[in-house]
Length: 492
Ligand code: NAD
Image 1 (cartoon, helix red, strand yellow):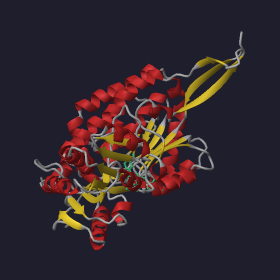
Image 2 (image 1 turned 45 degrees about the vertical axis):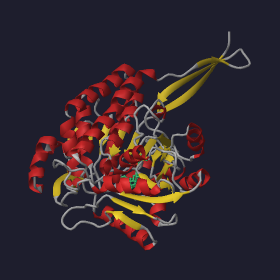
Image 3 (image 1 turned 180 degrees about the vertical axis):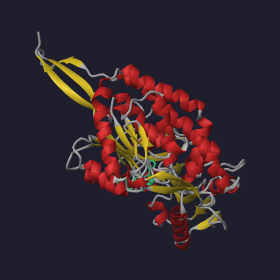
Image 4 (image 1 turned 135 degrees about the vertical axis):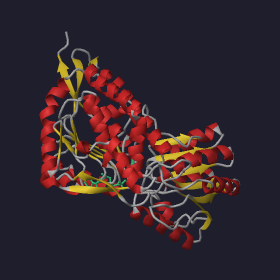
């Protein structure tokens, strides 16, 4: 299909009516009728226009969230959970349409997009179930006598900012627990990929989410909007997924109002392969950890640290698998790898590869941007990458696997930890004692042992150091949206 065909296909996936702001349950234009373009990364063409929220629109969205807060908090937990459950069922039925919409605006293959819809939707199922398990505790004071009671309450109106790489899952990971906890919210999706979030909001409305609980603001004015909303003492919580640089800005902006924060920021995941590893299994895991979402994932394996005894065989097998992947438009049959999100992404990946080569790395496969339209970069394997090369320090955010070797476990762990980030990490070994030692020594929020895919809605996803703080998923995920009041009671 060509670009214009895709544009017409959009009509069935997201009606014009919903390519606007959702404020207080009403779909409406932005102030002054402002719009911005959403592009197709496969050819750079304009897919559609979407309303471009102003700061004034954002204040109205917060007004709506504040107005809905008390009644939503007072809604029975079961009822809150059932809204999520209905949305879960509806998303399941519309999974193909949502996947197609996401693929169009983000570029990922339909298969990847379907995977994201299934994964993202599980947060709705999980938090539908968690809504009815919110509880405090009752205990006797250690000295006897008085009784201690804790009560859980929703934090209050939230502001969510989500990235373009997982347009649905990064939303459901926040919206699910917030809805379950009884919070209202204003969501600003990434300007590259607002359509999936708008489709999700329409589904939640249809599932019975009351007006004003979820307000959506597609906008190119993220900076001004976040400043304005964070200065407002009615806003009680900010949850952000995106780059560390923007996360730091939002943390600074939270200081005056002391907002609660969850920060899911960048990563620089090490992928350790020890000499006792099953190399074929490690290659399978590397394909998942590296190539999921074209490498545009905060959990993407970024630095391959491979024991020198198995490095040659690992590199050869990985290069064969990466080199066999077919690059193309995400909606086409037989395509394994879609385009990157934009020109800037291709430039950044190209620069890191060129710098590594200048530092002495060797390209085994890939490494050349293909001619023609679209923001494509081929799966690339680099070997002999010096430890100090920029590609080992910065997030690649693309389909590039830089391999360096190590000799000892101590060296491997020290190099893995030698990063400002601390999100995901991966370890391949068949030695149980080593598994425990290394998992304990790694300074990362998540460690995959002989597993290339670690995200799970029932587990606490999140990082440490410059990867941020707070957890999404699991029972930890709902705590981010709850306040605790302790009530001291006299004893009998
Ligand atoms: P980004 O930080 O540039 O943008 C993320 C979002 O922040 C977008 O919606 C953007 O419009 C908005 N934004 C930008 N400036 C803002 C400001 N001043 N105030 C408020 N919002 C602002 O990041 P990106 O390039 O879209 O996403 C890639 C980054 O996200 C990578 O670093 C990746 O590791 C990280 N990421 C992290 C996770 C995680 O869970 N840890 C998940 C996905 C992506």
